[in-house]
Length: 200
Image 1: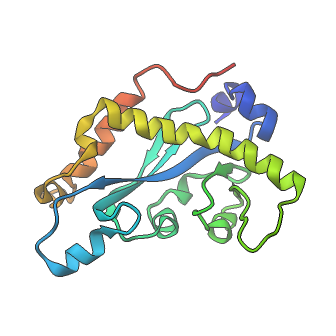
Image 2: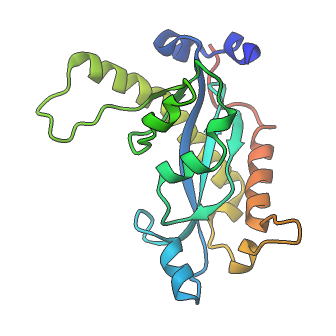
Image 3: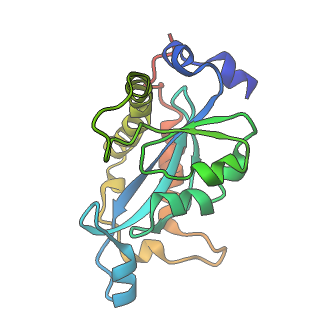
């Protein structure tokens, strides 16, 4: 952790100091439409308007993928995945996590003495306070890096654009899932590329 703080990108350090541990987001991979009606309903993503498998990804401020969850049914919320995929157990007291406003996990994340920073909600507000506007701008500026990593991974490894065959979702003898392994390997390979995050 000390090494990560020492190498904190200047733009992020100026906005949030050196306590930001990770930036998180979820991404979805399209799958073939299941024939089983229950599976079809559980994997249906209203956001993507198709059947998907969803993953939580976390990157360090330097643009390195540091966590990738197992796949979840596309219908599952970002909040549920974050609270149930072992991600929170990897955080340390005092860490700061940056996320999109859809990650309403402030209560559960504070249990680990970790701070969650998300853009301010604008619903039912005539106007945001200037301080909230500025912090929202800073979060959005830094949080875009996780979206860039997801986009880069998809562009380099077209297999992640789907649709994936249903057979890749079946659990093997060691309880692993082929699609989970594919996603993990793709993220590991991305970590071997030059970072897209400017460190100065």
